Length: 258
Image (cartoon, rainbow, N blue to C red; front, top):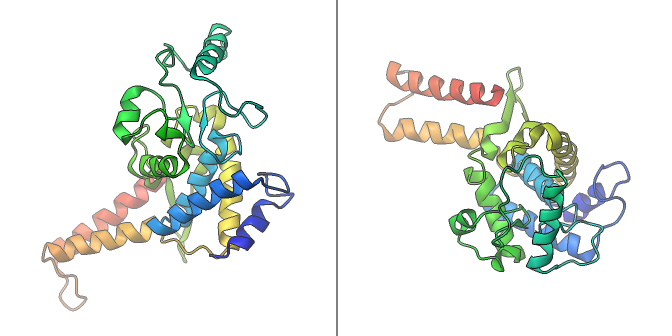
């Protein structure tokens, strides 16, 4: 992967993200995400969606932050008491309409690249209030949560899109994928769409070669058929083997259109 080409793309005046320059902290955060994506063999579209969520959740800072810390905030690490007070004030003014009951008063408010809230979710990922703000830990939480559907039950693979024409065109539903992290898609889906496409363009400019999740699913289906001893050789196709194959393929296409 050509990292120079990637950063040249995201620094482009027309990219829709970052502007024309990045701070050292922003570069470090992006690099940590790219490193993890390459290590895991993440698909191009999935990595673009992950970068888009990190960009949105941190206000472009690309570093783990506490809730209420924005790009323009001078205090990068406010006390827990300050964050709780800010959230209480916002809630009282009706600025958090999606919140039915304050979740922050015991200190388990949002932290990380993806804003992890509630003690049960911290426990689910095996992190503490402090470790949730560690970059390496936060990157791991973000990838695990988005890949496995641990934030909302929705996962990256749910939004893969394959257009059924020749040749097959693979794409991604960035707008809808906001549901992986938060249920505020009607409000923020459009932002994830903009950021996701910008990061997708940068990854393509860099020659990123992540494996398509569609290809991975197809390989898994073939392996399952082989392990079940259902041969699919052209000269001796078994009706059971072919039926399992096409059922799996149809399911993937249907999911991509859901």
